[in-house]
Image 1 (cartoon, rainbow, N blue to C red):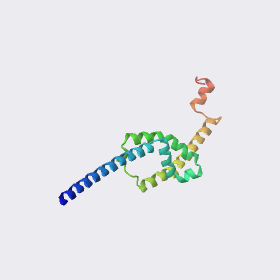
Image 2 (cartoon, rainbow, N blue to C red; image 1 turned 90 degrees about the vertical axis):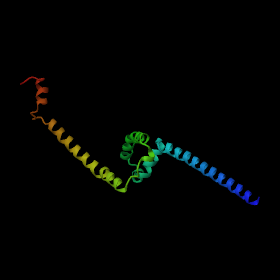
Image 3 (tube, rainbow, N blue to C red; image 1 turned 180 degrees about the vertical axis):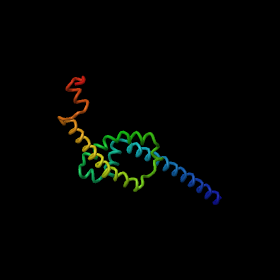
Length: 144
């Protein structure tokens, strides 16, 4: 009889252990779901931005914040459309490449665009310009 009691106790312990494991897994799912919902909220996304752009946040970089405010809705849509758990971890090389684009290429393109706008505005403002639009304005669209 003593052996059968031990078997029953072991079975009860095993059943209790399985129940505890199932409850832990269920609780883990709820915690993971809550974390996912929090991450996808504006507050959660903002916290991710602030953690990954510490220098910009510390410096109060309004340009970085304005870019973030413009892309945050698209980030949220992308994260809700894709399954969050299927998104792979971003490699350091990808982050480095993005930083090169943000820190070097975007400012370079802006400078070039500004130079082009400036050159175009000087061309249009020139009183001796022979372009068609200046003749049309003077002659109201008729040949002079």
